[in-house]
Image (tube, rainbow, N blue to C red; front, side):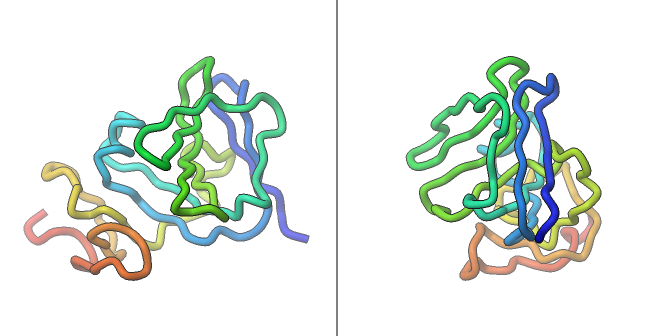
Length: 146
């Protein structure tokens, strides 16, 4: 039996849980995620929707673009998850909202073409132009000179 992992919003009103290993963990640089979090990058953990649940209060949901829903706490506003029609069997939780965010490390960067000029993460992970298995790998590691 796999270990149940959990997370929550800032006020604790909305909690989430999931079982099973992640499908992937990635840093996202897209404009939409930056605006949702007010941060230059955010990190997601993709898990099977069938093993994920909100055991207490349900999150508020905002349709940020066609087929995309952002889950957040309606009380404190904390972002919790990305939910999209393109991923019918997954839900993507924010790693920073996990009770133990150090349990997972990203293995790639996605939407690196949208990365802010003044921000860099100094690791050797692949930087994908967009996302998905067919996305072009722009480089491994930071931009030259950064």
